[in-house]
Length: 480
Ligand code: NAI
Ligand code: MG
Image: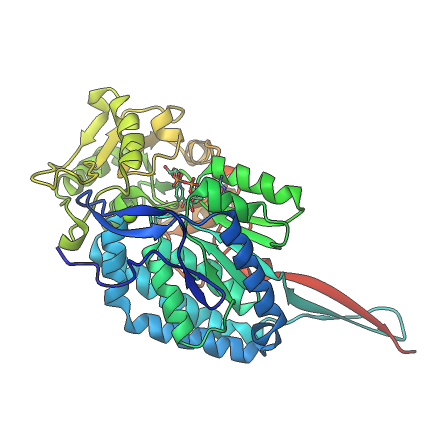
């Protein structure tokens, strides 16, 4: 096993200071169950200090900086992250159990977010608006001020990048609360960003528990916007806490994303996209392709081919860089096992062998499920593990009804050669993103992303995110 050589000092970044807390929390390697580091158990006082540090940044150098200069700093941070991809990937692999190549992809995405939002910072403009004679009216895109970022453990670097990157580009000062299961790359990023020239207080990182540091941030009266990715129940708590202060929130709460596979599609092209986005990151992906809807004529063929792919999956410790690593925690493993244990055995179509694995790791053999009804829990609820459910359909109308038949609406995929159907389904599917003859689980820095229904509201990623991280001021000047 590789040793964690950096950033295991249980410090948080508040303003210019790296500070400790009275208590610390263990950081566990999910591949082995070993404790590999400790993080600070920050609380309400630390959040308050971080908000003050962010306010000071807005009143100082950061708040006065030109958009071009902010962009230049973000671009420099992106280059510095790109130079540390291997270190960051290893840290993430050990911290959350993500196979190295997936961790590397996340680190590269973090660099790319900084590059993208660095380039966008000075292109965010307002409008001039024709009004009555003798007036000039224009709009200003202004930062909210202090933005809170509460992020999960499944794609720590990507979600940090899309959220903090856009907020900084728009001129906000950030308080980041990473998930207690995944703080190491956030702390490493903060060091890289400061070294690359990010002014003091523009980014503050407070580690700790959701119910403590997280709740303090969500309910802080001097925070002006909260961006959250995570579970539906926690999203509801955060929206309620922010609501008390009339603070806007962006919520990205996961899904039960379908891919619709029609008999006329190019199946060879589709197959890698059917399994990959289901088991990537051990299925702990908000936009995982967790439901595969297949037209009856090709159902058996798709089931057979996917079952073959499942049996060939290799599972092991993150640093061995196989197809599937462990789940992030014993708790997450128990959630997924709960779903699978409740299933009739004949509904499990294929599962690979687990083989010899470190006994303390949180491994679950991926499971391909068939024979469940669309309304069954396994086919309707988010599992957040390496489980995909195959569902047959006869007609396009039935496919749409099944696809839209959950509380979620994050991503959908459509595989068909029929051009009119491609456009029709892009219109009819309830989702924040629709992929036609491809599928991206989490990819695409440039692509606006977010959900409808219980998948949340607001959009992150792409240029669109910058609107969410700004407020609009209308200025009407009367001059005759
Ligand atoms: P969670 O939603 O509770 O945690 C996500 C973040 O929220 C973490 O930073 C956590 O510290 C923080 N948090 C927790 N309680 C809070 C509170 N009361 N106030 C403010 N912040 C709080 O999710 P958890 O417990 O890690 O995972 C449970 C389930 O959530 C998973 O099984 C999965 O279904 C879903 N999930 C969805 C994600 C997505 O990408 N949409 C990401 C992670 C989890
Ligand atoms: Mg961990």
